[in-house]
Length: 449
Image 1: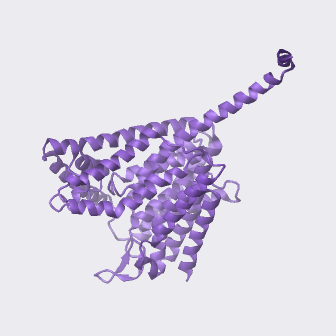
Image 2: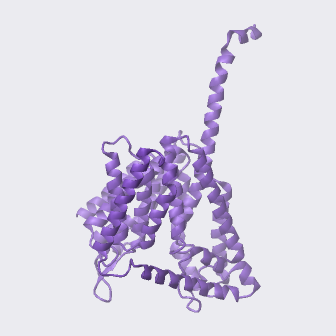
Image 3: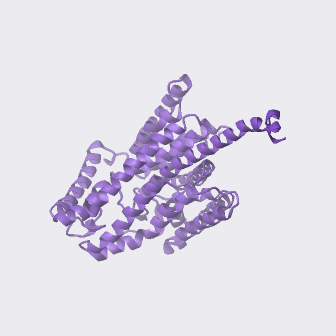
């Protein structure tokens, strides 16, 4: 009953936040898989009706879009046309390429299973972000709902070896059937980054302490789920963007940096020893071996691509060709190499152009927000989440499965357009106010008499 009550409470909270601030639905989309796992770990209904949570989040997202477009105060949608075009073209091309994939049925099945997530996360969700206020609303929703789910999953769920145990089900070995641990680790990474950089509720008493606690709990969940890449890349993202959010050259900023870094290192070491004592999963040798096997699979895919003739070099083997047992029988886990092999030089060119434009957007965002202390942290968090999700594509996932990365790709472009649009609006307002005294000056009235 506790699981059902909390599930309903989270959904009701998300719906309420969305009615007030439509951009809050973005947080719900990022929490989708964690909410689904919380449901399947507590109620058999959610496992037997696996699409129920997807429909709920999809409905709330559509509700948010409806409220946004009907609201008289809603602002114009801000999109980066070049980035949006590249993302859409890459997906359209990859969908077209299944027609010449070596095993059309396998490729078609992959598309059928993921297209709703692509539409939901990549195409619809970014439409909710069109102002700085929207970014703040989405961040608050993500922190509120994501933190609740992370606490529930870490402290109130049964665990298997790595993932959340699904209630009432066991695998062929008699062990608990578990859900995907990487999905909840991704959410923990997004929440940790937002907590680290965004002053979501800075006026709340003991807010700095709350930030540190939630940040540490996120790291603990990542480690308990055995998500090595998420843990390592979270640290990388925090290190890269910390100087842009905090003044590390000041005594206060430097002290905060040293304290948080030391605390996270201590917790990480403790969590690894406690959750993975006597196991080699976190050893350097195991990390190297696992990455080596994934790199070998990618090279096998590229071997087939390279030897497939000029047509394959240009147009690729076809999306999801790697699932063909004659190639590697699954996805290669390294998305850039997968794109090169399956979408060829044409698709890889679209992919590289998208990355270049995204990098340029990040540079402009960091430059434009340096004099905006109240909102800078939120924009830094978006940039950090983009980098976090991108690095993850270098060790897991596929082109079709990396919906969070492509969603943040579009959001990065939206953020740049938002900043320049709001800058132009402020400039027009300042020019207007500066011109008012001149227009109303008595000397100007003589010309009309």
